Image 1: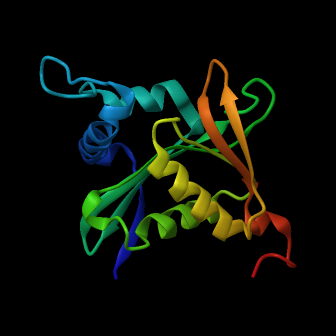
Image 2 (image 1 turned 45 degrees about the vertical axis):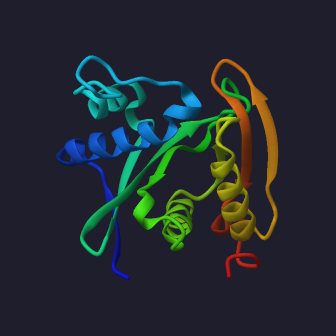
Image 3 (image 1 turned 120 degrees about the horizontal axis):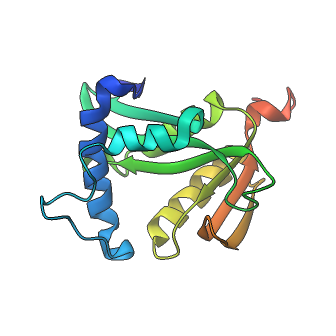
Length: 177
């Protein structure tokens, strides 16, 4: 299967917004979000707004499979667990189109991003998204050989379970197999 990860520069803002609309739709039963008067979950300036608010801490990526858009991920910097103290890699948003789920693409995409940004990672899920919690526990557990911690967080930045782990490349040659 032909897979490609693309850094989502401003050239891809239209694609990123369209995929985020589908993501927001998927989450709407859990978040309670409604569309606006134009039928959208996000405003037209959505990707630019994220770029301005996050600055250099915003790393958006798109996933393409067999030449078709299949998902996106936003990698950020900071901490859900200790926001004012730590600066780790965050999987801020992650989405795979339904058509491509269950084929190992999400796992592959996540692992590629973990390896691109070595160090400590935090991945959080909202309480209601039990499918995402199961997915991330499985992916991170496999990636780390079960060496991760899960913390229930409830602070101004985040509310829900968060998995924290060190990327394999960061562990040195003995674990980097």
